[in-house]
Amino acid sequence: MVKLNRIYTRTGDNGTTALADGQRRSKADLRVETYGTVDETNSCVGLARLHADEHLDRMLGAVQNDLFDLGADLATPEGPEPLPYEPLRMVASQVERLERDIDALNATIPAIKSFVLPGGSACSAYLHLARTVCRRAERLAVHLSEAEGEVVSPEAIQYLNRLSDFLFVASRAANRNGADDVLWVPGANR
Image 1: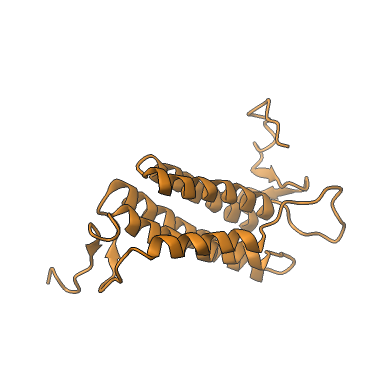
Image 2 (image 1 turned 90 degrees about the horizontal axis):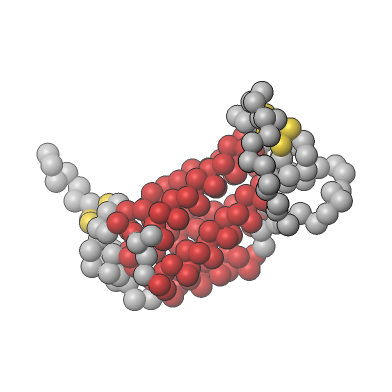
């Protein structure tokens, strides 16, 4: 379990940070950038929760917990030696829960006839922000998985991919099931 009794340690003053396995990496390291962007996604989800109804808030609360799991997964690289503990990893059931939530929300939302612009309600706008940051986290996770010597589980990448879908559908749900969606009108301002 995590125990934080000191917030500053000065160990990062030289531009490095510790991963969960104890190794030090540059704060500009791709792995650190990836789990930092997952953390940024989580903060955006927190903003959306301030405006969400109770049903959506419960779903978003589960997402926030999952994002901490994902951060722990990404902060614990697979190495040649086994760790003295079982690292927390993303699992298929977390991806499957997102799929069920997407299906449940989407069941009452009409199909879109155009791209949806971020906005409508505050909750929807924040969910779109979370979606775009999530997509950046996904791109970074894929880039990390392609780097020599780095491993990212398929479930971690699947979760990020599905999460961006969930956040899009949730943004439409927050817009009174699409009634308040702001639709893109191609060439409207020519």
